[in-house]
Length: 296
Image 1 (cartoon, helix red, strand yellow):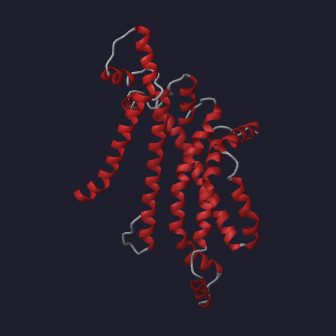
Image 2: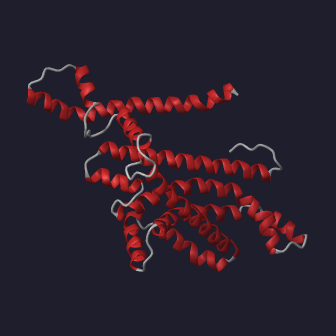
């Protein structure tokens, strides 16, 4: 148990340590010009240790040091009420709500489209090119349009943001499910037909189980894209709530540390959601394999 835990944690901690060292190095490098200019204006004698310390203590740095970002996250999570508009927990929940609803909508839409494409050749030829074309439209261009159009007919709040998340996350589900539903070898399909299996039985007993690994691989991508979609959708709302609104507020007031703290929290939320999907994948694959453990 201890060896397994060490094998899992050691590579992660090594990468985190390397990122921290590189981050601190760039903090000094990017903040040094302004600090050197301040030394020159005030005719202050300085040493390298003074420069390193002062570049990591700027109120509005070009790049905040890791400890400054951690301090900002601590201040806006532990030291703020969950219901406060300045709490990152509150903003994370707003983003998470849009993310999960959009993810469910996108997954359902993607699975239904994949079934239609696989079962109907006309749908395959006519629908798939349009699905691919839809992903060439930049999300930053279409997000304000969706917000404005739905708002003009009285639909506001959670649903418009979820639609943008759905728009991003349905595509990998469609592509992977089509691949998964078509993955059974023709000889297996022919064998089921010799047993007088109906198309419904072929689908539920052969095609659908074969597509499960493909589905969960796409869901890991889709849930991360859903977070991105929710954050992008919050940018045109004028700072009403969510991690996107937090990024926008930090940009307005030049609070770079606020921006970085929101980015770090967004990445943590994404990582937790992807991990949760991975756990569900393990459970589903164990059931498909008769309760035996499966590496995912």
